[in-house]
Each structure stands twice: as structure tokens, then as C-alpha cells.
Length: 432
Image 1 (cartoon, rainbow, N blue to C red):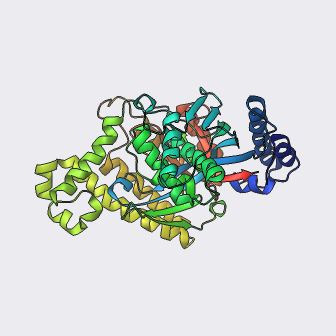
Image 2: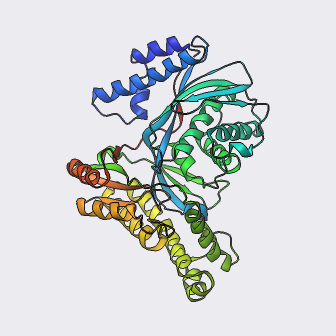
């Protein structure tokens, strides 16, 4: 279907895309939430029409969701197993072909960007910018053999900055789906779009991330991923209905900054890699657990105690992520919660990514974890994402949600406890 903005607006306001919006945002029976989603979608279409040619044919609405890590903390870069899920916070864009060889994107709250598709080489001056991600996604799609063409887009985001929900992966997924629709005939599958996003982030943006973030955003729902072969990861959607769990998912912002933590993150990879190198391997997944345990006395001398503890965490959390996925597939949410708590304890004691040794006075995550554990009765809590600063994740019994939210915000400030839903749909074309 080839729609103009006015046609797309009429369809949205008339309820023609309500089913798609309900699937994206895990809407319940509350009509106010559906109305809010419909209004947000219409607003971004109107914004596009104001900034670009609103009567151009081919206008469509696209979404790239944020993601939450459910299990497997810092296991992916060692070719381990992870459990992640897309959430109902996303980047939403209205886009249309522009008949030019350029991409123009206006994201609300950010400077407009323009990318010349005739020049897709990495730019040092673009590192750590959205322009780098767009250029990188375009370059990889061209490398895959698809003819590129330009488009215009207006985007808006609800993905919380610094929340561990991976706004960069949401953006890569969003842009990847726009290119896929306009240039590739929707032939790229979600796993390929995730790999394209990782390439853009590694090579163009300058961040040596793993693939979990992009997979969680692109594939959608709860996703179990085995990175034993990173070039061909085993990806499995876990068909669990989280609305039946009796628990709410909360991401709590501790107010601590991810700035100046590059060395902390790099040390995790470096120390795990040093343990693997003792055995002539590059990653811990290739080192049998029994060999690692037998070598611990020598590893303490060669790599240091922290490296040994971080390797212990890898083996424990790699196994835990697998068990978590199995628990959800079996419908055993209570056991899943037990495993979440175990993962959180391993991250705190072994991985040691809840505070930075470079700033020991700042321990917002341990403080938030302690308060969450005090408030919880029958739930689970863990550090969320890369750690050292940022957010924690909690599974809170629905009956205790108000008290938990009030307690955490009394400690950290109003608006710091965000109640999310697991979104069953990944990156997609929402409406056209």
C-alpha cells in the first residue's frame, strides 16, 4: 500500500491500526493507553508532514524497541548464552522515500542529520553519533548487495537514556527496518538486521559491543540466544506470556552516570580474556569448566583474583541464562525468579559490576539493590545491563507494586522507577 501522510493519519485516527499498536505496546484493556499510543503515532506523522513533503507516496510508520537483559550478564562477549526481551518503550518514526540519494532524519530533541549515500566510508568525526549508525547500517546493506535509495524520517523516542535499555540498538533496529522496507523489499530477517546494527555500532560508532542488544530489539519478545558461533548465533523466541506472571517489571534509575566507565567495561572483557588466554583460547566459552577450576591456583598468580571471580561469574551466569529460558518455557515463573536472584548475586560478588573502583564513593546501585531487597517480598532484583552505574531491574508482585515504587522513589527521586512491559514484537513496520 502506498499512503500519503494524510491517508496514514486518517487510518490511524480511525482505528485501522489499533491492533498493530496494541501488539507493539502490550496494551491491556485500558482504552486510555490505546488512545495514547494512537495519538503518539499520529503526532509523529504530523511532524513528518510539517518538515517534509506530507503528500509524498509511500509514507509508513516504523518502530525499534528498547530491550531489557533478563539473564546472562556480560556473557555474550565470551560467546555465552543470554536471555533478553524487547520492551514497550521504543523509537517510533514516520518515513517515506525522498527520490534523492540522501537520508535525512529529524529526531525530536536532537540536531537533524543528513547522510550522502554516495559516501559510506566510516568518518572519525562521526564516531559516537547517530550519523555514524545510519551510515554504518547503509554501508552493510549495500555490501549485502541491495541497491540503496534515500528517505526522509521524523523520529521520537521513549527509550530511557542511560537506562540499560539500549537506545542505540533501538535506533539501529529502527533505521535497519526503514532501509529494509524501502530498499530490500522486506527481505532482511530480524537476525540479519541485528547483525547489521552491531556492525554499524562496532565499525562506525566505535563501540565494541556484543550482539545481545541488537537481537533483543530486532527479534522481539523474550529471546534466548546462544553465541557459541557468533557468526551464526542460535536464536530462540521463548513463548512466555509475562502478563500471566503476577509480577511487574521495573527498571529503576539510580541517578548514577555511565560516563567515564569505559575502563570498567573494558576491564571485564580484558580479564575474562586473560583467563581464556591461559588455556590458549580467546573466549571462556571454549574453556571447559573442569579445566578452569583445576587451574584456579595458577590463574590467581597469573591473572589476579578478580579475573578468576569474573570467570566464575561467566560459567555460573551462562548456565543460569539457559535455566531461566527453560523455566519460562515450562511456565515456572517462581523458579525463574529464583534464578534472577542468583544471577544478581553473582554479578555483585563475582563479576563486581555494581560500582566502579575509580569512584568508590558512588555506590548507587548497591544502595538501590539493598533497598529493593528490603521492599520486595516474593520478587527478584539484579543489576541491569553493563552495570557500574545506571539501573537495576526488579520483578515486583503486582500487589506490592505501589509500595515498591513509592519506596524506591523516596530513596532516588520521583520518576525513577519505571514500570515496563515485555513487548512481543521486535523491530517492524507498524503501519503503511
